[in-house]
Length: 298
Image (cartoon, rainbow, N blue to C red; front, side, top):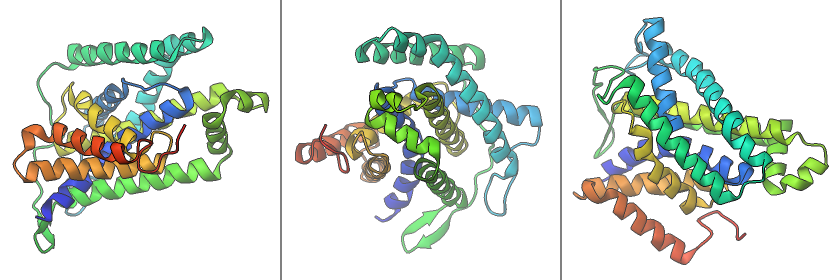
């Protein structure tokens, strides 16, 4: 029975990495970025590309079936993905912001970017799934009734490190404080001399960086497909809404609830309905607390 907790926490870590980018876009740029799933996918494909260029494979690290070659590839892929995201922002979203487009216009534009991004990846990489590595690490018993792979523990550990770095950046750096100020009131922040455009650039870079890490680890854990990020979109939005759209800690907590719920649905034989089960749980929570678990009333 307790096995679903281990599976759910690994899933939650990947959902949270992607969902934080949506949360930051929602709070700072003021729209729901439906293209976040494609950012995750593009980051994973860039990781595969860098691995191919380096020719080192993914390496190993003790019992873990990946090592510094994969981590180095992810680091380079973060830079490439951030460049792509910033170009898209410069070509599309910046133009819409300058013309004071409505929130629904920005959302539909993001939806269009999502469709174009997925089709572009399919055109370049093809439909067939690809794998970082075919090695399947052995599981071991972490607790009575709970078996995990060393890779699962590494994924959770990498996610926790990423969250710690993110919150240190948001709370200890000047740019982090400026981002929080813009999220609170962009007009007042601009009047006080904050470079809002720099804040927006950092928002995209952070979101793309975390999405690339999520995409690469998810591809390593399962398989790499053009639809991979789109399949993650609903759990990521569920985590955002459930945790509270205006609270990064809430997004992580929401991801934990979504991850555990999906894993429990699979464990009790409802794998084909896990999305429906997750949304039923989410609706139940929101009936009791409409602003989300840690959110505040707007």
